[in-house]
Image (tube, rainbow, N blue to C red):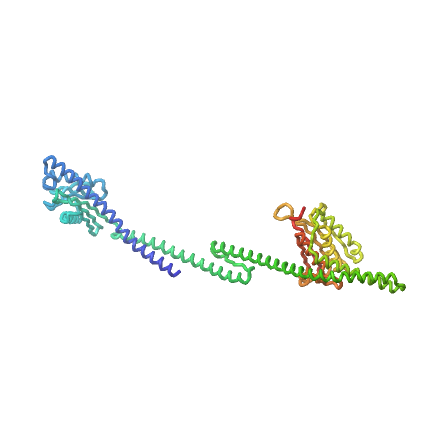
Length: 501
């Protein structure tokens, strides 16, 4: 920034000096050029008349300048050539008589030598004689600028040739009473205006640079903050619009990066969960297979014992043992189902009818445990492409968990079926929401709700929600749990629009 200030300051100084120099030299140069051109026209006009006089066997005017006819001819030439040039006077100089002849002055009157050139002021007369003599002696054009109390006097003289000899010169003169340098007020005014404009440009540039530097510093600090917290935002509401556009783009980038990182973390968690399930599934499959065969043998032996028993107590004990064996066999079957790859048999199913059917199957249990079942099902059908038995298994697991959570004190289970459109597009998601008024769960329990073998029930296996989660994912949907300790649980199953028939 310091370098820029120095450069701009030097530019202002140069502009001031150049204005003073250029204002005076430009005006004087232009006027001198006009006078030189006028003197050259006088010389050419005289030379043409001299050639005409020679062809007519007459003497050229400057050869006999004292003759009245010669003076009249030269005065006429001066008047013709200079009459349309405002403020310009001129005439001729005769070397033989060392005098000005045929003079024309801006008053419009001609002056003869016998009248002693009284129409030309003394200052102009002296300047014209000096320039005319110099042009003759130097045999080249001569220009002079003379300063007087009333302004500047500009003179230009051109030598007149007669063969190889110089017989005199033609001269032109003009007084400039008010030009830059003689009257400097106008020049100073122009210079001051230019300097003020340049200074204003410098100040404006410095102000813009200062504002931009402040915005850049805020952006740098904001980027450092974003490195540690992508949720932070850079506030530059008081900065220029250009800085605000950059900041808005950075804030959008931070938001996008955070969303992508959160999504990657979620996908990473799901991948780890899937890997654990795969490993656990292989282990479970092996254990269940090894347990199943001995369990079948035990059941057969107990059945034979109950058949051959005589005492009633023995028969009763055998019956209890068979019930426990059947419960273990059910657990083994669920383990095997958990271990097997999920293969869906998709078919068009009315989801509304399926939900009502599963709710009705639990009505007797709900009545026994003082649980009220409420449904909010639209009147129209919801035809979806799903595996009916697998989705029924999902709903049964969720309903059973809700009833178990309210079995001690009773409560209410509300089931809601709804559709959701996306951006006014055709189709949409279909969701089934189960909301109970049971004990609820804290955040730690909710975080492990879908983990295999994780359960809060004394007699639970911890496979119901885990299997339900995998079945819903196999349908391309998702299952979500929202719960709070002492305030119930809300489980939502969503089937994406891509599978909605």
